[in-house]
Image (cartoon, rainbow over all chains, first blue to last red; front, side, top):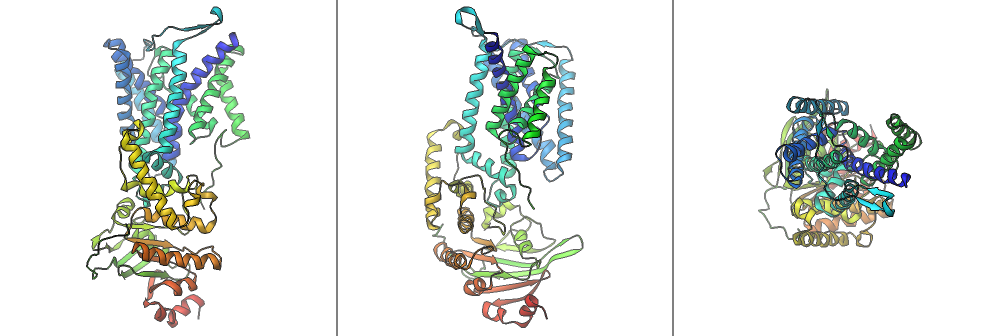
Length: 293
Length: 262
């Protein structure tokens, strides 16, 4: 039962990584850039919920809705102010800007909330699920996280494949120039991508802080990097890749914490990433990218 | 889109004056001018590197011209963005086919229809009735266009799985889906065998007649050019060598020299 318990909480952790990884992978697929500030948007989402639920004492639902709205606005603003002016610049310039935005968000949070860790009130207050006569307990947060992830994946897949805006996103991700010559507004499409990614980051923030209820300005940074790893692992640019990458990463991390060493778990996670990339440089579901000549 | 209103015949569909662009020190296009009447099938020819595709890129807003004016159906579109120019009514195909390869044949055409059908993103996410209604209309319109090009049987195929000749046709269908006034075809016969080229000539004629389309095409295949173009402009080293009726231009000594050398 021990193994199963670690495995399920690994899936749940992986589900959070997967939701975050969607933000990385969609932005990369459509805007061809790595938004390293994405992890910090999670942290902002966490603090918004913390302020509304713990400080103002309002119901968790209000906190989540506000956080989603705030992060959506934040993501679109970051794109408009920091990334759009660099649309034609080299990818290195955009990458460095993204790192700058990441530090900016962390330092603003430091100024506002200080560096002390805040105790986050878990937003899921349902009873835990007890199975096998008390031998296996699954926390309600774990279950809610996994269900949320599944719902998001289905909704997003339908959105991308079955709606006008989703089709525009696919077109822009394949050939930005041809798409704009067919009348697709590339800037708007990229802005919508950031909006969706950031809204998901807020949800990930709520789930993450419920599972690990200590909140600091650096809370988003490590999960952000892990989710980025998950996106690369699954094949960056691929939505199902983000799901698979996230879940696999979460399971590896949790099992190595349980059976090998909790200090080495991160090292093991990244070692696996390196191995996968050596064997499949484009990740598990990644496509071979043909450079245009 | 077939029933476009008749406007006064005296305004040309495309009127370009003194169009120039330099890359570094090189004048890629220098003093280009052209006037294309409505419904005309017009050819732009010239040796490799003469600046033909650059002219297309200037007309569609991919490059901003250093000098010159571009009037589409009387409206000044000089210096506008690609998307604005597409909305104003210029659509194009590409020398090296640029379909959305991983999308279905139907979805490629639906991308072209993007600006002609609307529902909000929220409507799409929540799948309100308006979503299904508009999607149904888009599918029907796209299928109509595919039928015109005899591609309706392959609507569910991935675009990259179509044979070459059909990919060219799909590119034309996608461009027509944006409901243009002027269609630019960049080397539509490139890489085609004589049979495919003959079929393409019929298709281009058909597009002109069926959609009352004005067409400007770049082509190297002289059989195609002399077979379907009513007028020609010849570019050489970025400048116009000559322009006029096809038969006159093709018999011009300077044109023969430019192609074959002294």
